[in-house]
Length: 250
Image (tube, rainbow, N blue to C red; front, top):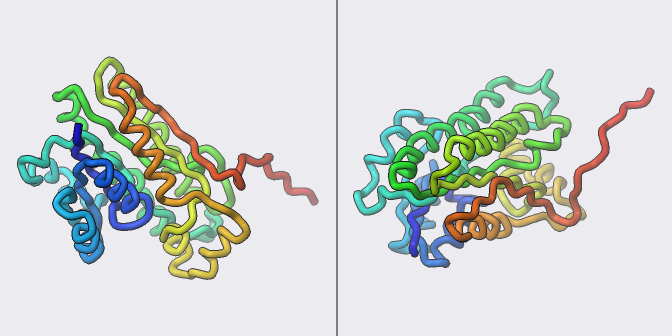
């Protein structure tokens, strides 16, 4: 059965890879993102199976109005992928700009909450649907400079599990994807304020995951039989693993 899938942050990285993968598998995608020029390019590449939707998930009024503003034959959203997110800066908490914290919370936390609240009631009423939230291994494993980014992703992971607690007994599924080291996207470039040399250095000497790998994981989760739910999926490349606790010796 062809699904209608709404993907936020759909014009780059995981979101663009998911849009391409879902359309290739025969589904329809509502691609939501801020950058209109990139939405236009994505629409040109994917054709009528894609509905381009300019949206800033931190705009609460726009998100609340979204379900009723969609074309009538696109309103029954089967899968919502809360992919839009950001990491800004990697300075210690005591020297960073608090405005960066506010931006991360507005997109990563508030945006995900409001998108979920906008589309979940209709899924429950239809007794079918799937929320896919993009968290991170940073939700579980702290690192210097991760502070609010890691905390925002920990919120996503716990939010996902608590949604499942609310939805037990319904046919509405919730999946939390937790990627580790992923290269080839704009993530680190944005994190380091456009400094591409610092972004490239993050992946030096590694074979990281790709956006397509995460799209594969998302497709796997949504394509399982409807009675099966992937609660959490932690994904790392083989060059990465959890490490020991840090100890500072004098």
